[in-house]
Length: 273
Length: 234
Ligand code: FES
Image (cartoon, rainbow over all chains, first blue to last red; front, side, top):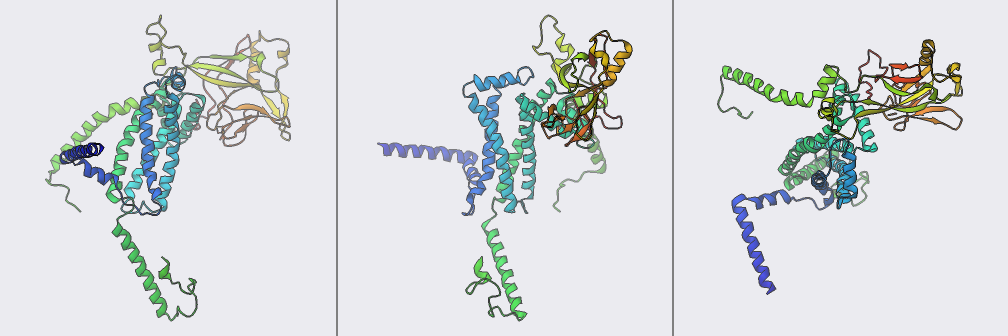
């Protein structure tokens, strides 16, 4: 009985999948976008990019939820955050996730960049993906900065004032920068409205297509490089080492004389890759 | 080079498209850019300010202690979007908002003092002696003297604007300390240490009425040559 139900369900799902595949090709695309061969060693570090994506997705989702209660005016912003934290069901959880995933996002982006940097993942042909990634980093910093003021408490307020004043030191456009952010020449209702607009519409709208581009470029070149690219590089390395060895022999330097390659008795360079 | 251009266009067409593109581009970009940048245009190009230009009361001169500063708050009415008078006064019988839109600043008031350079302590305080006898009804010349001897300092640190406070350390030396990055000033607001690039901001427009009340207008001592925004103060 159970076996029959299971095989029926399997048939039905296969039918749906085939139907979608014929009409949209979505299954092949999913396979192409979701599966990626990575080397077995250190496979976990290749998940840092996905961790960023996951955290940003959390930001979008919890951010949309917070908008149901948040009021971007100087007289009500703080009270609406208070309401979220104390009266709305699971408000602490939703806002907590928004807050903490924002904090973790900055840390994970740092680790992601470090991993790409130290593994040389920015080299040709992946330079543009690094560039897009740096733009994404700046947008995330912008989001973190503008989100801080929206709480409209002492902490967020002063941090933003200090941040804006740092901007005012920039040469030539310092004044314009701070007046743009303040929405005038003093902190007031206009400042909160602008930060809200930037945090909730401008930067998310800019970040979404760039994430798409980042993923597209990633899939185009792969996270690790093709297997053949890897074996080719290895073969080239062997070749140069062999040539070095030959030239050393030609110069009359007998490698069997003593242990001058310092790799021990039964070791040679070739054996140590 | 890959061949990008499939049908070559003539020079005239090219110029025509270029001109049309510029005009259409300008029509499409100027309104939204000016819309978003209107505060920049109003403040930087037209020199307007959101802050009320009038006199605001701070405190009475007899409230200023002898050998340390005291802080007082002042509020300057501001006009920004829905806080503007057209919005607030559109229906005078119904209040538009529960909040008065103001810029709240703290002012440190103190008597100008001479500092002993070895100990850092206050050596002499320029507090006019007639203050011991009366706290109002000052004559013209007395008001002048009071005005000359009072430090009217903004509490906004000259570095990045955190609020400074007055602290007395263990050996009895008092200083303004900024909590953000450790900027230090003496009682006259003179720079002593830390990241700030200058002395504390002083209010330039100060007046004292006959009853001893001190009033200020919004505005600080920013050297004329210096760009108004370096460092920036609100
Ligand atoms: S803001 Fe006062 S020292 Fe930086």
